[in-house]
Length: 259
Image (cartoon, rainbow, N blue to C red; front, side, top):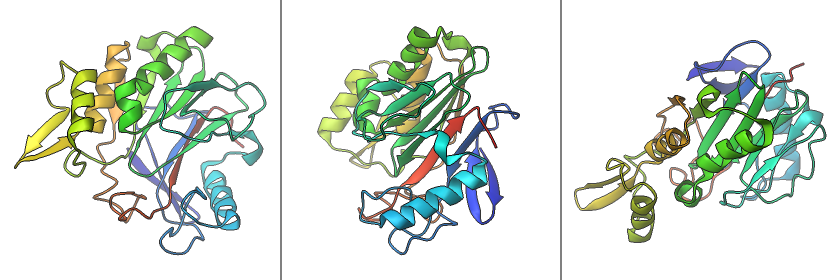
């Protein structure tokens, strides 16, 4: 990924994604107005930050990315695997799901994260964008596979054409898990021995590798993995683990419409 900064807002883009009319960004936590522990570019009210702060933070982030606020579609994220296709109108932000897809040039897709995996998708042939939120539950239940299959079923995409970016998330060095999570991951990825790792008597889950494997399993070939740990870099990104359970949420977006 490469770092960009505009008007004090820091965000990252995937180097494998094309320039031009595609806008995408994974925002850091700098450049907003929220006080600690949400300092400063917090994109969610779920942790207790004010609506006014979050609204101003989103305004700044969208302006930095060159995106019109009226064109943004989002969801009420629930750690599931449902995918919503967005038409010309962004729709209800309280729809419960964890992925969005669209072929509308006027729509920008937007979700929020704090250790879970942002998955950004673009089919440059059929001009389709997608974004998904994958925590451990979504990862083992097939979130990455579902969003690719939805792009294929709804818009006629070909998996081999899709460009995928696996963004900053808690990394395998910091994501210690219990038996329930480890067993679920092993069952979901029986042929990927590196996804569950045991070191010094502790068990760790590699969400980066798991989601890359999930994307490959449905035919995606171009996968850029950021390999940036949010817990180890909580000065740059919000992290539930790195911030000891009380944290904001950083945003990620993708769309084909720009100002």
